[in-house]
Image (cartoon, rainbow, N blue to C red):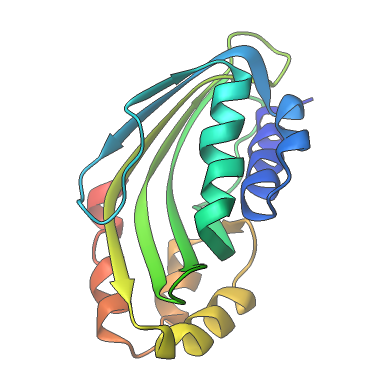
Length: 176
């Protein structure tokens, strides 16, 4: 198994509310570290263990959000045990229909060649809360992007003419 496979499994688990897949991505004693730089969303700063990470990033997340598209920005890593990439997420709140779009950074670490993630550091640089009426445009755009790996060029060339989306993508140069 590779780190690429673990990353892709995590994205599938999180975006599709499939916590049962998380054991194929994370070591049992893995650690999650969150650095949230916005007041628009909150997470605990540290979570230890596969069960806690699964609850935080998949089960509890899916109770609040749906229509989740998470993109790792750039190309998949080769045969490595550590990798850093930017990310973009588009999603909607279940209760209100409000659309969220966020950007930040992932830092993945495996302790060995098993490919299982032993540490994930997530930085949330920016998260925008948008009206539900923008959902159709944003989700059509997200659905057309390569998933889960998307280059900055493709992302920037295809950006919808929505000021808040264009504004958040200005963070690309600062996140990587």
